[in-house]
Length: 199
Image (tube, rainbow, N blue to C red; front, side):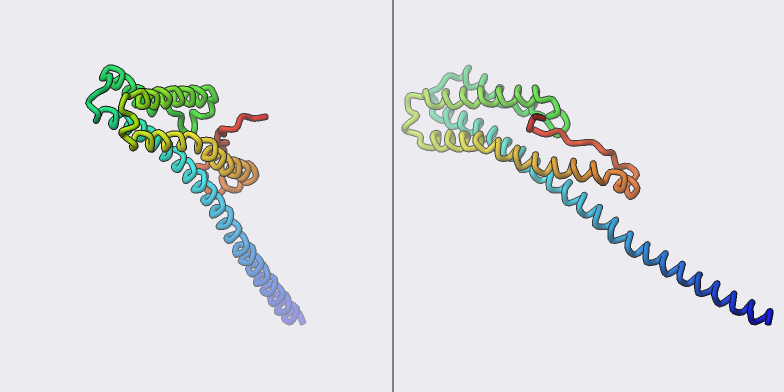
């Protein structure tokens, strides 16, 4: 009788152990996809933010290149103010050096300073080209002017796109920061600055 009770206890214990391991494996199976989904979404948001930043900066670089190209077109006429030409070329070069990045743009004054300087230099270069006595004889100059103006008009659109994804990433890390940190110990929860000023 005692032997039967011991055998029964052993069987019950074995069954309980099997259930425990099965349940544990089930939890691990459920946890892995959740962790994968968390990090996949996090990676997609990071990539979207970076991609929109790169598009915006590339467009800005193209605008600076167009300004330089317009100056070059004026110089091809061999009839221009060389001192003014050199001054404007230097001003364009300085723009890139003073441009904000994804962290320094947290200072709205820096963005305002860059925007103001860009508008001034663009107007100066365009005015320099249009004041040339043979401006109408060089249709490429007017084409470049139109392209420069178009780039300036895209600025707000690019910034809105960037802010949209930056907000999505900030919101996601606010909600899931602790979970991400458990998977990536080096993760630091820092909100990205936005172009849009807080209301």
